Image 1 (cartoon, rainbow, N blue to C red):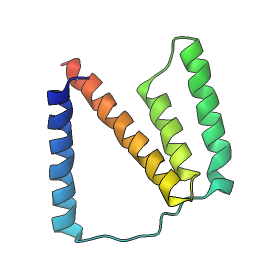
Image 2 (image 1 turned 90 degrees about the horizontal axis):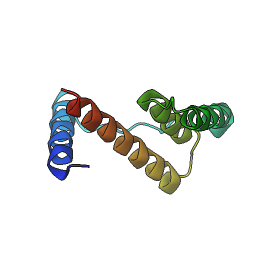
Image 3 (image 1 turned 30 degrees about the vertical axis):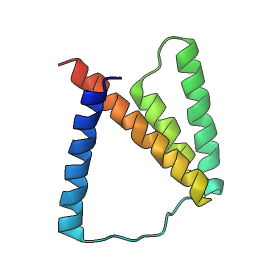
Image 4 (image 1 turned 90 degrees about the vertical axis):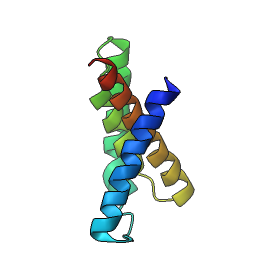
Length: 102
């Protein structure tokens, strides 16, 4: 991880959040997560990640799907927050990796 690269990406995210705030104002919605609906999908995504990793075929999409499904399956705020932070970190890492290829 290159801290300068990460800070540039976080600045891009901050600018996007500012645009969202200007366009939509302060937003408040229910979480909409549901363990009954998403826990099986989270388990499947985790298993797919494990298998892909074992076979040296892991992709950012696999990792992102796993983190996304895990967050969709969580209803307790502290645990959901942790999952959302993990998703955000994965996306930042994905962007860093993509940027490094250019």
